[in-house]
Length: 127
Image (tube, rainbow, N blue to C red; front, side, top):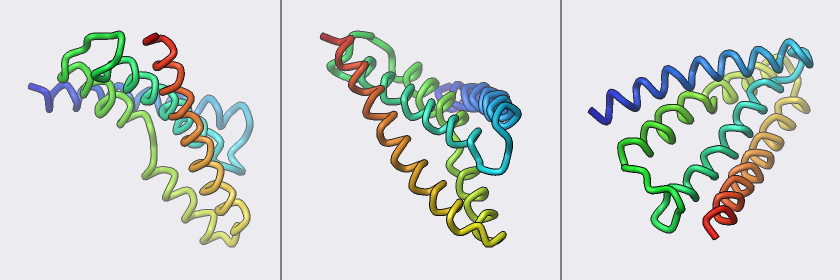
């Protein structure tokens, strides 16, 4: 049953990724993969928050099935490492080495800061 919940969550997360990434791309353009970067940063923030709030020391008592639905399913479907990789490769293949490097550096830095911020927010709420 858990696998089914993860699959359902992945479908929901994938739909949310499509919507959010498209919204950002339409707003700021597609010369740089801002939509993917935004989705990955938001997903990192949320997964950090959920991990802190629902972990062993967290405030929210959530069963392992619900936790996997959210973290592996919804957020796994929402974040886009494979899209990030393909877009970075495409930039490199087009000779856009600076943009490809910037995408890698920004994605890693922004998403690590976002997951830390989510965790810190969750830890503060747990107090």
